[in-house]
Every structure is written in structure tokens, then in C-alpha cells.
Image 1 (tube, rainbow, N blue to C red):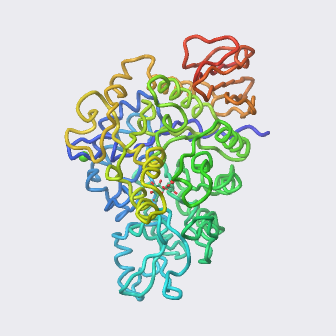
Image 2: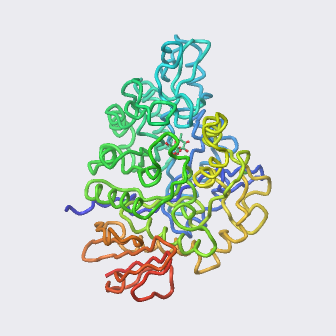
Length: 555
Ligand code: TEU
Ligand code: CA
């Protein structure tokens, strides 16, 4: 196998900031850019190389900034362009880089393009969006939106429907129109010329709509699946190659696509010839855990070792030597990783958070750390629908509970397990009121466990989850085998232990992780020679891995 090509974005660790929940500098309860700037030393000390900031553009916030009304303006609540410029220069001054979120499959319905487009069939911006006539008094086809309901919204004035794969306030842009592509590319160059270092591309695998045929209807589903017409189409690949020519090739960027899909899909976006993107986010280990029906996300499904390991090992092997992986368990769309994959009870929270950290920092690929994960922050476990802010929960509640299709208590249990709001509660900085996130009223409540879990305490404690992340990140920077090593799975059938090696330039890294809260029989590490690089236990037991124990050795 050929040796990995070197690149700064392979060696980097990325830290994701969800700005609304990171740090509020002016007491309005909403995180902002000056709040980020004020905490850059914290991130520098953690050791991360790149900050990916979720959308900070002007937005009416139907989907917390993933509905953009002006791509060249900063959201009022987050500050001003001057604040942005200062944040960027302070990030660069510390030797870190900034990746922006590019949300261009859709805009906000308040974007000037859509305001124009909606004015009528003859408007010059009509074709910036996807308008169709209805069929038999109903929508143009049977597609459902990702956030419940039909993917089509009827517009009385022009007697046509427009497409929205997310909320109706997020109309899909018409990438088939060259003017749309030029407008987006021009905007991207504008940000690159300001000095940003990359893009995380929101649902980029959906930009090319191939046709508008009805989609297959899964058992129990209310709508058809748009995927065959909208996901990973040839058109999408054409647009991305054009984007590469028109924008990406002109700068030295980190590009990561949010695409979902299979390893085969991924290999088309991210290839070593770099004709499209550097890497993509896989969804299979997260969203693939459910049973594939429309209600899928709303279930009691757990995260057994066998499912997660077989999926991630397969992704490791499929991309090896051909493309680059992302490695992540949590983000702003997923619940807290320690609650989902580890154990958030006091007994095992710290141990399991460190075990999961070991996994994401030692698999092959660029690790993505989601804010608060480095503290072992947990789900919030709301108990009432009124506590949720996320539009996804409210829409699902209407579609399934208010219609009598799903029991309210069941749905609340599913939400508590998987709702996106679990990861969106404010960052826990210290033991001050509201965990030091704000002096006002936070837009989403702070998790009550902040007296136990907060940054200030953890920075003082050499044994904290934060210090463990810091050590893992430093190890990545010190040992090329962690970045460039070939992935070799071990003990693939072990019921408790996830183990693998990484091999590079005469060095071997061996990793063993007990995925369970029980002692697990395991002799691998006893038999492995070499220096221990990191572990979440001070001592080991011969023949066993202790609950959630993680050991990494270098030989
Ligand atoms: O998410 C796209 C997406 O398909 C999922 O992550 C989805 O939000 C989630 O699984 C719902 O169950 C991106 C953004 O990350 C997300 O925050 C936005 O809401 C969405 O696109 C629309 O822009
Ligand atoms: Ca604020």
C-alpha cells in the first residue's frame, strides 16, 4: 500500500463551536463572537489546531443559523463583522485556523433571493429556487422533509410549490441554475479572501437534484424518501468539481462535506486526487444505528459495541490508502457522546468519556471534538415537550404525537435519548450562576450538573477529562503513527473489547478499549510490548480490562 500523502488537515484536531451555546459576552443569554474570542486561550491550551464554527451568518434562526438570510453578514445576536475580523485575527495570532460552516443547499426564506423569487413566476430570481406545479391538487411528488411533513410548500400568490428538504423556512437553492452556483462560489471566495481556512459543507450531498420522481415509502412512513433523486447524484459531483475549480483550488483549505451515505458514496467525494473534498462526515455509526423507518430516529435504540465497531472498522478499512476519514461521535445534531456511547452515571462518566476520547483520537482520520465533550458533558434529559427548543422535536411531536400515532411518554423518552438539544445546552465554564455561560437568562437551560462538570475545575485537576483530551492531542502532534498509521483491526469478535493497531514507519500503536461497565477478560495488552502512551487507569489488572478501561501502547 502506498504511503499516506501528508497534509496539515490530516495532522490537525478540529474543535467544533456551536456559537449560540459557547459563551455569552453581553448578558443577553445567547453566545456570541466576542464570547468565543474571550475563550481562545482555553482552546489553545487544549491544543486543538482548527476551530469549526457552526453558522454565524445573518439568520432568523428557525434552525439556529442553518437558515441563512445573508451570507455576507454576521447574525445580530452574535455581533458584528468587526467582531468577526477580530476573532479571526486572534485565532490566527495563536496559530490556530478557522473553518466556516457553508450552508448552501438551502437558504432562509428571508434571504433576499427568496424574497424576490417568491414575487412571481417572472421574477429574475424565480429560478434561484425549485418551484413546481402541483399534481392532482396536491404537492408535485410524495417527498417528506427531514424535519417531518411534506417537502413542498404551497405558495398562494403564484399557485406553485417550492421545495424544502428541511423546514419550510429553508427553501432549497436550485444548483442547476449556473447563476446560483456563481453566486455561491463568489461568496465563498469572499470569505476565503478574508483569510478563513476552510469550509464544513452542510448537507452538501443533496445539492444536485436529479429528478422529481416519487420516492419509495418505507413501512409505516407517511411520505416518500427523496434520497434516490437528491442524494449523491452525478449532478452533485459535477457541482463540487466546479467548486473545486472556481474556489477551493485557489486556497489552502480544509474541506469537509456533510454527506451521510455509504463508503462507496464517500469515496466519490474525497479522493486522493482531491478533485472534490478532503473528507466527509459519515453518518452510519450514528444515524445508521436505528432501524431505517421514518420513525427511526425516535426509538430506544442503544449503541452496542458490535454495531458501532463493525461500522467504524469498515469505514477505516474502506477509505485506507484511498481517502481520508473524519472521526467523531458527537456534534450539534447528536446527543452527548458520553450519554449515548459511554455511561453518564457518576460511577463511570469520567472513565467512559476518556475511553471514547481515546477512540476518536487514535482511529485513522481527523478527530472532531464537539464543545463540552472535552469536559465529559452529558445529556440534559428534559421531561416535557415545552422544554425543547429544537424545531426538529416540535415538528416530530406534531407529526407523531399530536396525531395520536405515538404515545407522548414514549416520544419524550426518545427525545431524552437522542434530541439535538442535549448537545446544545450551554458550555459549562465554572461554578458561577449559569455555569459562567451568561450573566442573563440562557436561551436553553444550563445542565444542573455544572457544579460537578465545568472547565475551571477540570483545568485544575490533572486527572480530568479535559487534561486527558489535552494529552491525547499532544500525542497526535508528537507521534506520526497516530496520524499516518495503517489501521489494522484486532479481536474483531470480542464481545466487550474494541482493539486495533496503527502501523507506520517501523512503529506500532496498539489500542484496547473496554466498551462496557464490566471487567472484561483480555490479554492483548499484557502480550503487547512497548511504552504505555496513555490510559484512563493508573494501574492495570493482568488478564483483564477494567470497566471502560483504555490503554494505548507504542512499540
Ligand atoms: O444536518 C443535516 C442532517 O441531515 C442531520 O444531521 C439532521 O439535522 C439530523 O440528523 C436530524 O435528525 C445539517 C445540520 O448539521 C443541521 O443542524 C441542520 O439542521 C440541517 O443540516 C439543515 O441545515
Ligand atoms: Ca450574547
